[in-house]
Image 1 (tube, rainbow, N blue to C red):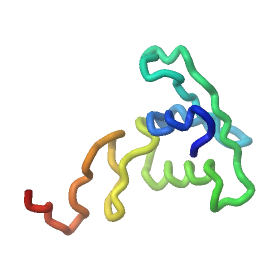
Image 2: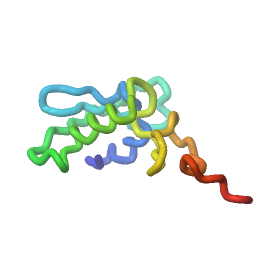
Image 3: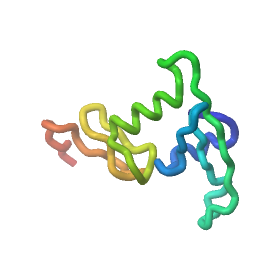
Image 4: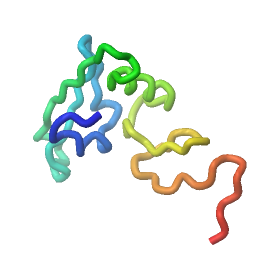
Amino acid sequence: MSWGPAARSWPALDVEDLVLVDQGLVAVVGRRKTDQERRDLDLVAVPYLPQPATCPVRAWLAWREAAGLTAGPAFRPVHPQGPAGLARGAGDPGPPPGRPAAAG
């Protein structure tokens, strides 16, 4: 998802910031990092696209369900062989299941 100037804010979104409507999603995006009271917000419409394989709304819904998201960060770290991380910016997910950590 990368629509307009709000694209830089997508990684900071919480599940609660993405609202499903009949036409797609409405994202509530903060304009400034320093706006802790969330007073300066943009509403960004993300429509359903005709092709399911490239539709950002369908992709979000699939991700939300696959990751079991109900609250908190909407986009979390993912390891190809492990579950989604629990927090935004969790850093190194560690070794995949069944592999020892690399010697440091």
